[in-house]
Length: 405
Image (cartoon, rainbow, N blue to C red; front, side, top):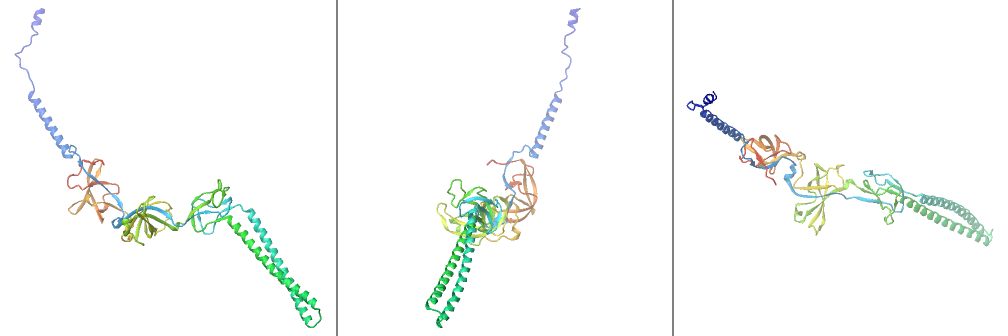
């Protein structure tokens, strides 16, 4: 039984077998066609296209004055009228009425030194002057009496009613009284001079502003010893440093080779590093008539036409020397782009705006032209990046590559 069962397990090779070769070939062909379609679609959309290397132009803010600038120079804002205010005498500072930024007027008391001894000397001199004036009044009264007596004795002598010796006594008394008056007058003059001296000494203890100014730095505090030369240990010389803000000028160095581009009264535009969004009108105030041999430059001073409280001494500044005055409509900055980045088709302007690693063709509206820059009225904003000189080598949506510098 076992052998019979095993004999039944033989494979019948004569029975037909089914292999779906045609179906597999068809599916393989469909896959290849689909792959080619996907590749074609990706290539058509630019995904598989190689990135185009392009140069970039930035949309920036420009000022119209840049198109008629002859020369640029850098320097600093400098106060032409400034002072280190100090005392004429040595003393302890007992009062300081200003601080940094305080505005002071000419003659205004800035600080006081201790002055009790000088005040006492002034009071003593005033009392001495009063006593001298009273002595003068007394001498003048005695002179009046002596002159009356002298005149009376003179008349009596002519009538021989008095002796010659009595007349001589009256005359001597008169001359003595007259000399006493002159001495009293001299004493009054001396006392007045002494009083004036004490008042001057008292004034020296008051530190006053020499002109209208703003306090820049405070160098001493109440309790410090102030001396005119600052030689003593821990002594302070200048109490404050002040500057006249109406005397602010920009001092720049101009190369000797460019000096012919600069002249007195020439219009300028001033930009301060601390105020990058502002431009200030100026003009050439002075060309200092000497050269710096080490730098081969000439110092040029430029004044501000419009005053601004934000302008401070020692600020860094850049000066553009212009060929003409700036018009009112040229005061504000314009959004602009290099002309070579703009495409023109059927009188319509457009650019390839960079967005990541792709570009998008963007229509724009242009305005005035400033040299090689064109004003952008709409379509772009300052800070945008566009393709420079496209020349038809890229299309909308194309991938790009920006070369590393």
